[in-house]
Image 1: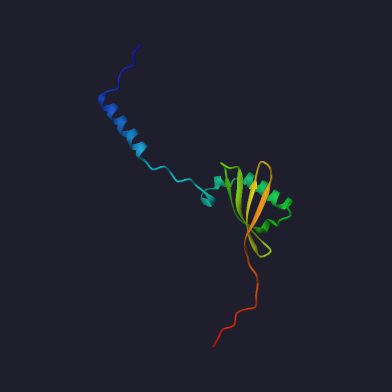
Image 2: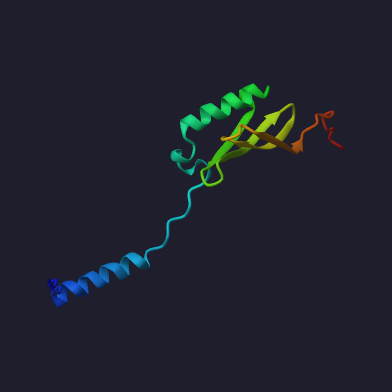
Length: 113
């Protein structure tokens, strides 16, 4: 059985539509807090539980991002005057911390005259 060929105008219209679709820019990959689906609540609950189990204060969490392709969370913690970068692997529960910046209080500055 032979399929009927589309009318010339329909064929031309279909070609124009496919050309238009292929010409559209690829949407940017959403990262960070750009989209709530990248920070699902179940992962947040598991992350907070893991931080608490590791002896960290939950208020120390500054920012985090779920990387669905790598299967881990990365973000920042503020603890005892230090800003720390962290990674937490959901599958294994492994947590790694890397100190990035330590803030030290010193005497206040005095204005010179």
